[in-house]
Length: 209
Image (cartoon, rainbow, N blue to C red):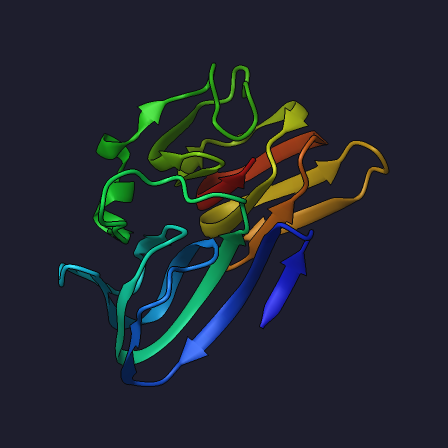
């Protein structure tokens, strides 16, 4: 089910029962999804296999060909970037799986002064790990300690809250949204306003340029 669409960047949720199928035609978009339930495998054109399960982040670049196998009923939340060109280099375009263990604190770097989503979080401590940064698509995990900061120019982004509670306030009209674990949010390019982290937050994100 599609939840948001700005013409290039789309987001939604997807369920699928067990089964498998070939994907011989190049994928028309770059898709990123976060696994909520189930287990599956994405195969590349040379037979390489990438297995994934709950808590994992999966990236299927534009142009990818191969195979899908759903080994246990899947529920995922997804974002797709319908950019113009295939950005991957090399003869084989590979799917990528980043496992939940890669979201651990020791895998993250302090990015408070150069935040990938908000530019600068000031005195509020934030950390992140960017797993994928190819062409107009960036994917990673972001954490932030309690505190508030202003956003002058936010990236066009999709995110799914894994842990914690935060409020996102639109600077243009003052509307505020409470975001908790399990929520999926999409923000437009150039968004400005305020972020208030009430309980330490961990979220996975995709930026579409």
